[in-house]
Length: 549
Image (cartoon, rainbow, N blue to C red):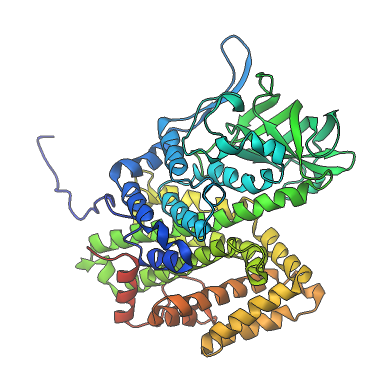
């Protein structure tokens, strides 16, 4: 235009070309402390790659160019094929190359679960949809390992670090991905109401082939090479390995009806499918399908916690970066007392989530230790409830830091906000998680006792922690008929106490005090930005959260 009306100023530069790992002191310190120091150089290398402009753009592209379903080819043959933008496959190739789909199983060593959690946490800050098939593949491996004859033909393809996007029978592929199919229209979380039927074809029971007929209302990632599916036999709900292609090279009769039009997680194809005598191999004992697949769910729930903690971390650094560069009323937003209070409060929440997810990952290292079992069985659903739910409010607060610029799709905040609710819903919504926590405590009271002992040792000398623990004990002692009603209250207090104890043990004292003080009572309310910590302490919190250049 020949008549310029204004000069563009006070706009925030893109946050790019930074190292996601080396700018995160909490992640560095606690990955080392929890046993993954041997993986530090890999994390530093990966963090640099993920922070590059070109890599960050992959996440944006994968959510702009969405997957497309073709049910038939041009000749009328059924193909049920989902096509993706190249950015999607590039993201999956990164996850696969780093071994984030299988590391603790393919390269077992002390700290492998923590190392994998840290790497997953880094990539989750770039794009979340591609995590879904990676998580399901990761979680399927311990289930499939219990079926030696089946696993023998899958092992190398599951462990492979080369992403293979081709739609071919498993025998012809270099690597494979595994999905899940549990929920149906009529039941949702109540999978025991499933009506999909399985008819024996070649023997009965574990390892036998069945023909499945029915439907799945949510069928995660239909482009996966196989799915673990629940279906009903004469002896109850059982679990089946259902490949996309039959052993004879023909396409299995898993018919994709449509892709779900979702609020977020749009790069990932979620679908509805029908089974028309689809071939499946029984995994686990007949009639024990739910307990069989629950083992898979424990790992997917851990990944929900990691993914939500990562979303919080990315939203936080975007908010801090914006506030350090954007000016209003004569000074940078980050220098204004109320904004600094909000950002510092968000930083506390993010660090507490990071500490919790790494400690939880470490519990998967010791399957026979009673305390670690309590962490896996009780804390996993508790952490999924709290961290995933907090991420929703957290993302909204970080978007608000950006103001109107955060609400438009040309920036990153709208995508993060739309992404936030999925982990709170997937693999069991909030009430399901709280009921699972209460059920685990009732079935394994010795585990609950060990957790309470650990918390008491960690927080006995801190007044705020003592108040949290006292309330927790009172709710735990409530009559059984009241416990379900108090489920959310109890689980919230449990996670806050666990986070407080971890902050006391592993964060700077001034951060731990600020976290516990603001979370142990009702005076601060639920909104972020109500800290009583002084300005100097808040500035220290922000510098630790995202060191200024």
